[in-house]
Every structure is written in C-alpha cells, then in structure tokens.
Picture (spheres, rainbow, N blue to C red):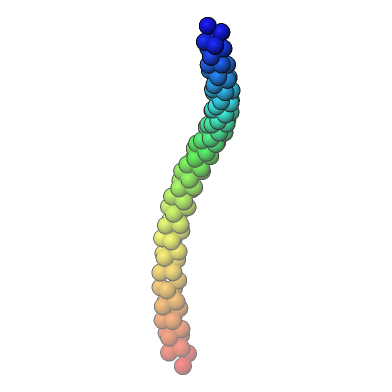
Length: 112
C-alpha cells in the first residue's frame, strides 16, 4: 500500500511538473501573441492614418488639377482671340504695305 501511494505521489509530481511546464509555455505563448496583436494594431492605426492623409492629398491635388485645367482652358480661349486679332493686324499691315508700294510707284512715275 505504501509503495502504491509513493508511485501515485511520483506520478502526481510528474504530472504536476508537466502541467506547470505547459502552463508556463502557454503563458509565454499568450504573451508573445498578445504583443504581436498589439504591434499589428499599432501598424493598422498607422496605416489608416497614412490612408487618411493620402486621401486628403489626393482630394487637394484633384482640386488643383481641376483649377489648372480651367485656367488652361481660359488661357487657350484668350490666346485664340489674340491670335485672330494678330492675324487681322498682319493682314491689314500687308494691305497697307501694298498700298504704300503702289503709292510710291505712282509718286515716282508722277515726279519722274
């Protein structure tokens, strides 16, 4: 009976040692997993902040592009008007040059 009680005590001591080892291992694993989760949550928060900032930047840049396109369209319209005016001025100057040349010819013939 004493031998059997000693064997049971040894088995229980071995089982307790195994349980203590497993509890320690599980606790360490839980700590590691908890730290990993916290690290990942921090990374998620950082990336969400980056997404928000980049979304805001995209919005601002889209607005700037729209403003530049409107300014470019206005400048193009203005330049087309100026081009038409310039072409008319060149045409008038050409006609005036021809008229002056003809007048010079007439004057040279008259005073020659």
